[in-house]
Length: 278
Image (cartoon, rainbow, N blue to C red; front, side, top):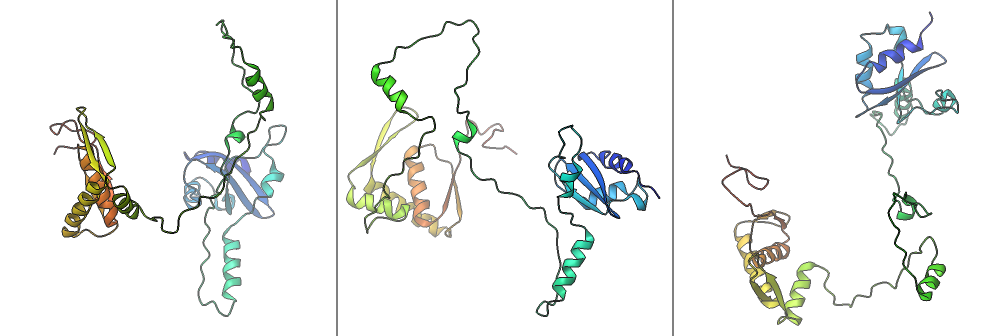
């Protein structure tokens, strides 16, 4: 009995999520190469076209594709499609049988999962054109700047693709702080008289020394611990004063809590992005 591959493709394309579909017959096996928008769910595709196709026209395997390969003439490249591995139920059963044959394995289940490729990071030089972009002239008078001989010399000696300059490794002293809490304690001990300057919303200037900040942060830490907070607990605070904000932040850091600051709402009478009235 002849199988019309185009009818199978039409049934697949009738599904909303399917963008492209192409069916090939590998010996006695019908394979559907499908491009879908969204999550790849081959079992759902199979069940949806079961209502439109007879059993002998149902694909035995579904291969997910990002796009169908084309030849120079714009037709689907069947040779390229044939290079993609086909993982169907028979392949899964064969692997399960091979693994069960190993004496040390008592139970086994082979699960087919979609693999997500991790792309390498790109440098700006890989994204930007090496040649300068020529903007179209819309009648505006160009501005010509005269360059000095020094500028011209620097321009000629500069390579198109800039190199990466790496300096010497940072040399930390043996007793350098390794945490933020240790850094604040060291600042309070060695630079206790150095002041932080807070500029309030009304323009008022407030100063606070590192020693005062250290003491205030420890007080806040003691209060949070008295409330039963433990390290990694989140502390949500909404403070209008910059000094209160910094002190609360460092109190959380000293205790290993996670500070979660939120902005102060402009009004608490109506719903807004910060506060919702019930």
